[in-house]
Image (cartoon, rainbow, N blue to C red):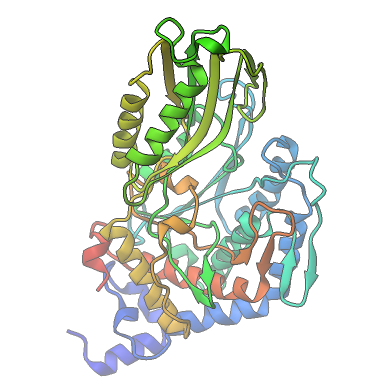
Length: 461
């Protein structure tokens, strides 16, 4: 066992850390802020104006999901930054054969461990996205600043997170320790409306996850009443569509043996059964659109519908759509089965069908995810930041990390902090940018100091 004198030397002189075996964590025993933390803080503080200017640059490039060239423009800028950090970078288009899902593509970058594969502690996967919900038709296009608040399309979700990620890596490089980490990065160009099938659009993300030990998603870091929160889970987001049919004729025959109840009553029966019989913890189910009549049309995207009908005609057709959000994929399967069973209990002379979209799976809370949050809070303590409680997953939406949550532990949101994501006027707190960047850098370094084969719950004490 090392004596106190030797331990002090290790803390004071980070160069001596190089020869230590993987798994030894001097930070865990340190009583004062280690030199690595100081180097990270100094770099981030010295380069904050530069980071803000970089954020302005990429926010002013429209990269709505369907603006493929805009997304690729952002990808090129990020790619250049990663190459300067000695990452091996590849951009893979997703709008042409053989991977044509109608999206711009995915950026994949790798920073190998200088000492060899798997010899830099935990292999870290950083994920995020380059697209926003604001297409070229949106009037909300430009970056502006008022005091410490920046406003712009995607400034919070999640171009601010891209800046946090890049400058955390730059801080590690400036501190001389980036070469002692093994990092993979996958940035999608279609998180806001992912290309289908996901087996193609999320293939590279899953491949990278299979070669990693832990994932950090650079979506927004939530904050409420001045307290930052850590996300160890994200609920699913899966669409459903119901079509009902029935007999049609003069309204005087409604409820009769020969006419039955008609398509709209059948749809109303199903929706009310959902309301009364589906509720359970962590589940929500929304009805987003209802339409019915003698005839109806629904567009391919499922966002617009038209219908025609008369007050004295029993409607032969009806349609409804919505979503379900679940805390685990097991809950998703159970709820979908229950919904199918309820749909199948038809009123007389009616029929109904339900189908489910591909959507986003769930990221369930796990002990490993919570151990990762505990490690992040160790970084917070060293840096003098407050502890981050676990966020209630009911308070945020779905995200890309759920596509890989079955493969490795992760944190779902270590990026920018702001307000109004997905709405004109979206903001980011520029003061929080520095805070999030510092703790992300220290967290990555801590992960590189953990034994690669040890579970997080055992490695994080």
